[in-house]
Length: 271
Image 1 (cartoon, one colour):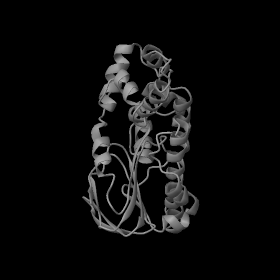
Image 2 (tube, helix red, strand yellow):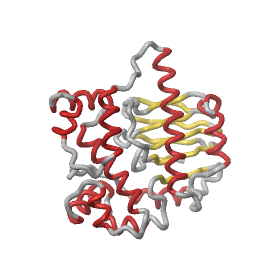
Image 3 (tube, one colour):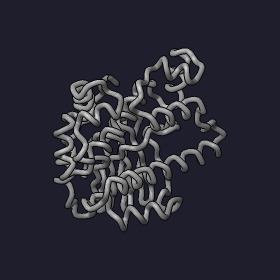
Image 4 (spheres, one colour):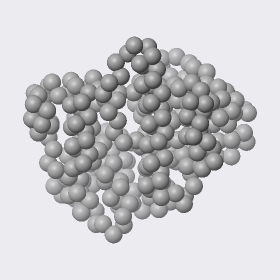
């Protein structure tokens, strides 16, 4: 079985057997209990042996305050995070009865466990894994008030930095520019608000900082590959925050994986 790129960050846990991870940087063998997180920008392929049991999730995580490496391999994840591994095994993510809050919390729990393992290894190796307090404060402010008229200049003033200095700190800490982070925060909030079908698209547009429904629609379509109204309609049949496949020994879910690759994430302008 071979899995190519999925839209969004991919987290995989090998429950049994062996899986080969191929990226431009080389090849790694993952065995039972190992987990890997690969961001959306890293081209990769997972090749599982015939008798492997693999859990794969496309995670739309909350904007992190750490710049995680990609791929991030955590050996013995199943032993180091027994509770998370047990939850994934006993409570499949693809269950359509799961609420949006449950799915978001589920993804955040997985992301937190992977981050904790990475921080532990960084400290053991003598690396500096401390988050940038300035970047963390600005991300927190934008996340708390995504509808405000944020600009790079305003963020820089908040941090008492120049635009270029702020941009450099964001790139060092997160590997993204302030505009990219702002866009991701706004799109995440937009997805959450669109989940409430009683809210008009115009209301969602203003709530996440766009001056018109047309501007919001263009930005959302560029980011997600579909217009807000179409995404809202599709969200009744697919999970808006997370697409997951749980592939066992008989490969029953290959067709489901293929169907879920339709949603393509592309870059767009923040406003």
